[in-house]
Image (cartoon, rainbow, N blue to C red; front, side, top):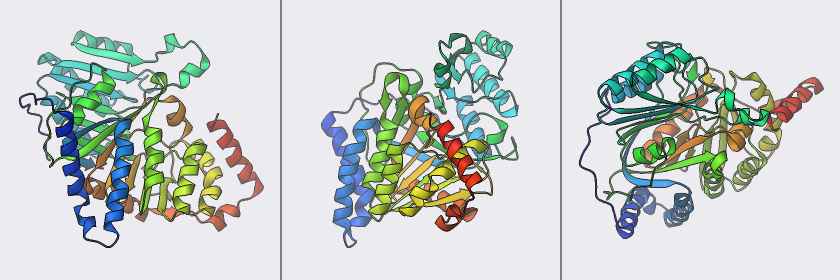
Length: 414
């Protein structure tokens, strides 16, 4: 089992804007060098240069990052526990669900050990998603030196609608140098056979570099530090957020930009696929331009109502060339996008109304051929266990089924 290196180096000196821009340009040329030798390559590179210029202002961009794509739940948790165990300064953990099971309790114990070593430890939980963690256990964490924050507690609900605003992010940052971000909650269902049940098929990114500091800013906002001087060999990482209370919708804008600017393909994985109208239009327009748009969603779902609502939308997308697949082999929970073999994103954002309108969400975008290739390979492996939805079969539904799909969609789009 590989371990995540967490040793700290001296604090890097701030980079001048010109130096940072040169670093990004060098990284861009490295990623797109293979395209320049192909017919039409210059057009492809020029289009992506503009796409990157549109994406970068939406979030915190950094260079010289190391990115690993993890799809094995056991490996994810083992690497995260190892990173916490190696912490020398600070551990920040933000999650929607933390269950009092083997995975959740092991995580809490690692946080307590880090606090005992003198690390500053912050645990930010969603009060609804992590409601099974007892008050006594939270008090024990606080007594051990862990600072515990509960997002949107029950006692503070001022109106029924406020209950729908949840902190859905999953972020771990260690010493502002190492980070993990993706779709995995801290529960046995997200682990494999060694630590859990292997129920969910999910994806997580393990990150090293300046992007860890940008993720830490989402959990514990402070004054934004000046960008560090960067060499060009690392991956360019973009940290995006959706935060209804801060009126930030960078993820939504980035997704529409990716779809609107894709040249060859855009492959999306979303377990809860009830996209709002603007995203439906972006999917349709991309497919009509000739982009290979594929959506992988749940065939076996832990929220059956969402799957019913998804099927209401299939017809409009299928008629316009979007290909839709349902994964039956496992319960899908990953949220990923790959575009043109050069850009990939992984995060907590679902293509549904909850993520779009209410939740606090995070998405990590990576401009890197290797990382994008690994995410795309996983997408193709998932397709092998999925079945494609055909327009003819969708149209053959009886009226009771159509009414059921329409009703479910109305309920989830309110």
